Length: 471
Image 1 (cartoon, helix red, strand yellow):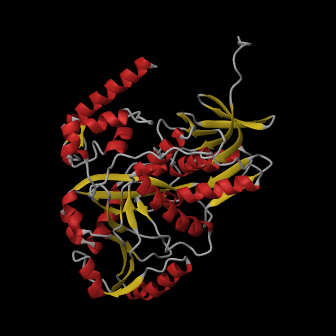
Image 2 (cartoon, rainbow, N blue to C red; image 1 turned 180 degrees about the vertical axis):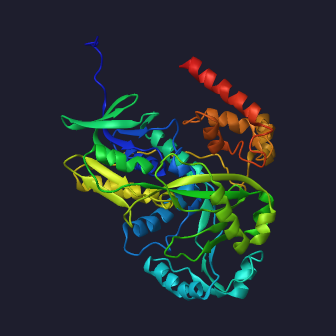
Image 3 (cartoon, one colour; image 1 turned 30 degrees about the vertical axis):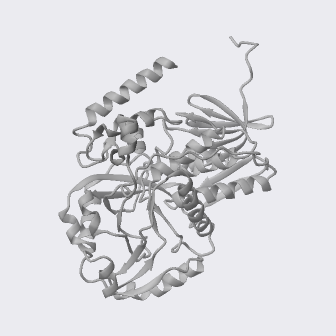
């Protein structure tokens, strides 16, 4: 029986579908205006899809295809995210990168790649000979013929980036709908109804930033513009003891087959080797494979054979939203009050904030241009997950003020009880162990939770139980 006195459901100005980096950035951008914003995510946490598993490189855009929307937004996003990281504590290490040529054809391609970088507005690349290559990376395998430097390439934390943007959006008033998978849409008088598996959400405008599911959502609106092909990228993560071997990002010279396999330090102090590039049909196939590992080990023997003597502490795979188009697919439909943000590959980490700017401009062109808020709160300061920056377990002053920061729970990653407590008390607390891992690095070390897993699981269950009792 319908309650006649019940308040009608709210109609948001904008609903953004997808809580990854791009969707969170768009929600944050629009929530900085007087608009009311909903962020709708199918999973139980933000950043739990494509955004959580990539190479976490802050790209200069030096190798993008000149003149594309992607090249423009990556270059702009590089500046925006770099500045935002300084304001929010997102860890960034300015390691630089080095493209290494192993064949005469690759060596001949380096000058063309420098010209390509210049066409993209990046002027920092320099050609170097083999001696300089080995001076910069002494443990590189034998046979390198030369290289191209890219000093602006950096490593960062994709988890913290996503969480910072989503937290910022929420503090700006965005209403977050987690665990709401959009299954249908219908038009009503002046707005769109998003039918989800947990109820209906109404909005005057809809932005589709659903990542791997963007093509499915686009078809719900009656379009057939592109198909997302999940491209699996598998990576090997080596122990922190190997980090001195890889002082910067070592990139392959790209070919017609793709960008190839890199060796890179991570913001957490490890070294990674990968990724593979395998087109699949299953958008949930994030498992690793024996053939993928064999491929990476073969590449590793050529790139840096000494690295393979180190321990592999983790393996993972991510899915990129590849499409048949060679560029981002970002289009607006004023009649439907709908914006598609599709085909955002791994460069979305860097370009996310610029994509958000671009979407806001498209909305303005289509007739939706709410003014900026008169005053914005200070953006959130995020817990540091970077190995090169101060961590609580080493902060004597912080421990003296609160002993929980001196109580180590995860010894591999030196995660303390205070950090776990803070994660649970945050604006966006974790819903499961993977969410807690992304917020603290717990379970992410050499033992992969063998020693601390039970204790961490107990803390999580206590938190979830307490939260359930309060609600």
